[in-house]
Image 1 (tube, rainbow, N blue to C red):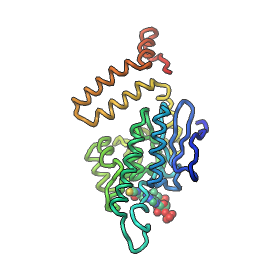
Image 2: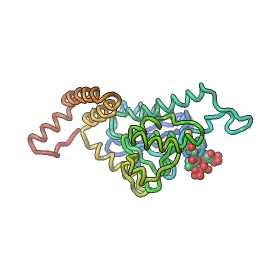
Image 3: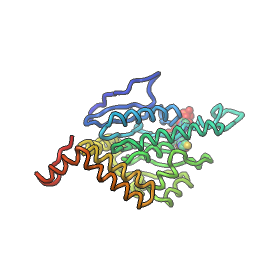
Image 4: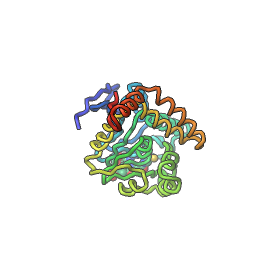
Length: 278
Ligand code: COA
């Protein structure tokens, strides 16, 4: 794939999340917090800001990635305790834990709300909040050595970034409980089998495979894709009846976008599959 040309300006020091742009209106959000990409409040704040900025810039697809060995090792566990692990030991107070939880909620909701297809390119491990970030994307491309997991229970806590909610909606409640109750990691094959991963490729091909997939969306009807995403995601939040009404609304709305004129005209004039969308 082409080299990214970075469009994000460093604020103070090196940014903890990089925004890179690839050909074809595909944006890449790359976690950049040391070896394990721990999701500190600071990382999540930058992720929230960049995802919100991206929403304004209307990319046609977004890929979220980490480094070659670690997508993200989850919440920054040092922020769970005062004075790190030093004695006398003291957990962070509820107000601080609430701040950490809110940072997850804001950042991952901002990623989930991006009005275009989003793909997590997951090389290495995606644990805890890292798995939850991948779950906030529409799709997950994993490498053969990728491991997903929600190990919070092993710390005596529970997921706080969507691990009990998005995971259960994606893989079903029993499988989500299996992962959340045990804290065990699942390998790429199991992730694919349970629908946690959508594609598995060679470990060093993860980003390229995600970009290739993103390019297929980038060539598509951006308005219709955004409406389809919103119909599925927001429709799933309510009852079937509400979802069907929501879909009707989005269906009618889709005819007001330039994509519908392009697509329907092209079909009637030239047959299926020939439309070229702006
Ligand atoms: N938060 C803060 N620091 C973390 C971290 C996290 N989530 N995950 C790893 N680290 C730190 C380690 O403490 C270690 O720090 P050190 O170099 O100062 O000793 C460093 O990152 C490297 O970790 P290490 O375990 O030595 O590397 P590894 O390659 O053997 O394993 C992981 C990497 C990510 C698989 C392993 O560290 C791990 O399982 N991390 C915890 C994941 C987790 O429980 N996440 C849920 C959080 S709620």
